[in-house]
Length: 388
Image 1 (cartoon, one colour):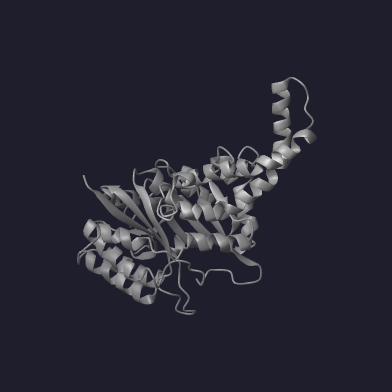
Image 2 (cartoon, one colour; image 1 turned 30 degrees about the vertical axis):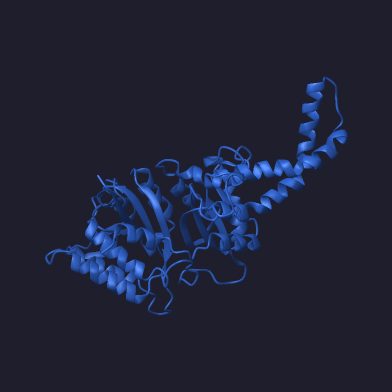
């Protein structure tokens, strides 16, 4: 069976309630589909209106859900009528065999089946009727497409607005704008995507306790050139620090080999001399882990092109964003991280420690410039699967 492309739109209400991680964990943990795209949108009124009309026309004339879903999109997806500021919605793209049907079934009916909890909407959505049988509250949690035809129709529509209404959505109506507001970058590393797993969703769920807002997301592959630029400060730090943490290790190793104690002072100059070689080796290991390629094996022409390890970058915004995210992430060494932190729960070593987070607002700006959330990864995927 040929692969398909399916989409999930995580509703603004779901995002505001910090249910994003739980929703993502369900889709990644309960299907065999591959997450191939992730992008934050701040839909314009025109986009919301056109999508609402597409939903209305899709439903049979006797269906009660066409108008219900269309009115929901107009009300919740378009900008706030009072302020004109946009709402945030996250669009996820999944690839795999029978992807549309798998996403549709896991999402569940908009009318729910009470007490079950098997589907996304049964857990995160609401469909409440009053005594007269009229809908008094409706929140479908996510929006998806039932068929390949409507999937492509919808994605072509959203792609029309992907340059103007998506990327970094930092003017949404529910975002902080007072003193001390920062942006920080989190990059979920390749070990989270080796196989279908709840890891990405659960990490986002843990980070939600920081009380910050996600304003951008990108599923991408870090190229060798990007990784070298991104991790250059790490290489410089390793070169500076090796004489301090390497000297005791080298002195102990030489003492064991020779059978007598060698003072640390005698090997300090040696460690200073080999620190560039140590930093270069560790740098190669990091870049290979993050990209799938050792930079020493790549030509300068290949480095901007080679990327074979999936990552997801997320930009958070809010007061003291850098400190709060790093606190939730935990120590670089997972074995030293506190219980309940991301790295303690999902890391295995100093390098394979689930996620990276910026260590300062200045670092966040530098790293976000390398990642470039404005890069439009959607159009190539949509052209591949949804060509006319």
